[in-house]
Amino acid sequence: MPLHRLSVAPLYTASFGMRMFTHAVGALNPPSERRKRERRERRTDDEGLPWSSRGRYGGVGGHEWFDTDPGASRTPVVFVHGNGRTHADWSDHADALLEEGFAGDELWAITFAHPNSTHREMSDQLDEFVRNVRKYTGSDAVSVVAHSLGVTGVRFWLERRNRYEWVDTVVSIAGANHGVSVCSGEEDPGTLGEYARPSRFVGYRYRERPNHPLKRLNAGTETPGDVTYYTIRGAYDHYYWRDPASPKLDGAAENVLLWTNHIGTLRSARTRALLAEWLREEPDDGAADGSGRTAA
Image (cartoon, rainbow, N blue to C red):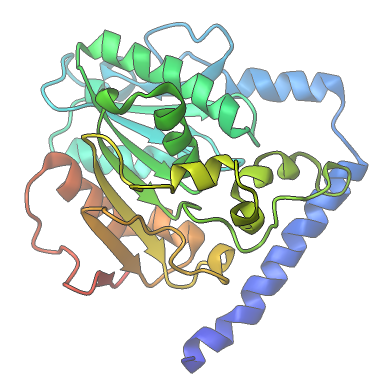
């Protein structure tokens, strides 16, 4: 193993250990019902949307939010955040696509009601969100860009609801397509609190369970439907130290490796450039080379 990889491993281990400690402390001191309600109300704020979410989810999008002319001539893009995150993760990506000529009505981002949503919760909220995007824009299909836990959330939604005809392109960024190395899927909610909720779906021991939903998603083709799939993963992503190729999908149009970590795959300027290339369906001079390895 190269020395530069060995040198960063202790940092990842310490970082993950601190997060687990924080989750454990949070479980011992759970938020009050009032704080939970206030947090949910913030996450389900729909003032940035041209329709009411009825308190089921939050998000932003559309020409009024982005201050552009109305109308959509391209396939709308729906951004899906990861565990504990919000639509704010995608601000820079939306700005980059606006600079590429996308309209406000072609850019949308959801915030799930619960910061640690289960896959069933993500599926239900995504279904309503995408339905509204299609209705508002008049588009038959959308492209979906997801990061981290949002990736398997999108794949679960597509399979569970059979919505492949609703989607033209899926971009999977650092997704746990073949499990997460840092949890088994048998985490104790009393120890890890709400962090344990989604871990059951992506824990690395999913392969041992015959009817596990992640195992079902990977049975047969990993890229079902008339959908174009792309993946981006990081060479230094500590979530996948057991299986660094976990984010890859067999059958994807491209599986790109960036020299960065889990959050780096989200924030990388290279990721934004790849999104512009893939979503506008035009070649880009800075595309990854034949090996799929690209500097972040």
